[in-house]
Length: 242
Image 1 (spheres, rainbow, N blue to C red):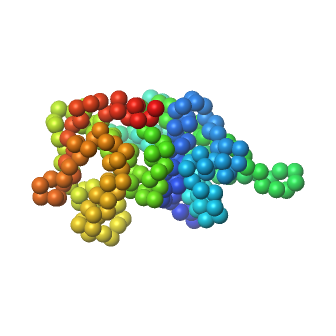
Image 2 (cartoon, rainbow, N blue to C red):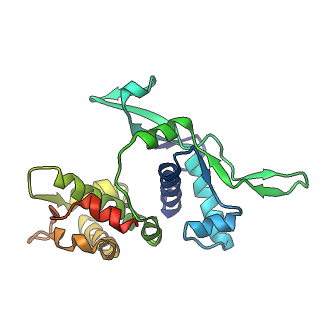
Image 3 (spheres, helix red, strand yellow):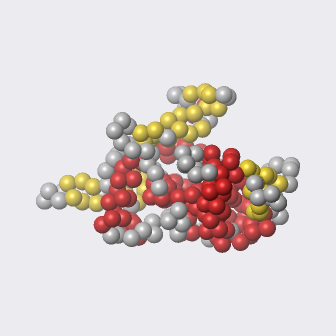
């Protein structure tokens, strides 16, 4: 991800939550226009957030940072003309939306909540053409106190799903490598990262009771070990999303 000069890269729970909401609405409706509710307070409630001044200020800042950013995605080169090839993978930078505002001035010179978001055509096409796993948005939104927990909520079933497609029964992941993926800019030692990671994982696992037996620590405590679930991961997630 990159952003325009002078602006911050979006970070924290709010951009994750907002992007997930937009993505799910595109999948559900099949339309490039996403409803944001009649008022901002209603929209924040739809996201499971409060409507106090501090929350509104932080959400607006991070959402606008998200709009100002472009995201590098892997695409099918047959569907794009501006794809860049890197190590055999075709990539493209896309905006989520070409509009960086939730409000407009009305005739009384007051701010009016726009109530909808027109997503960028390339972003819309990317979402519509991508295959993904379902997830429960409300459970995801309940984890906003920890960005890492939100990431783990999406990551864990995906890794188990990939494992089910492979021949080997288990996957062993070093905490040093997990740190590079989930907290690459942290100054934490691997030991302290492991403590943080397991704390976040403990927040996620109650939402995935079917996977309790498939997530363990290695005997030496240096690896997270994932084992192949007996039940279909996709079927479990579809049931959870009902």
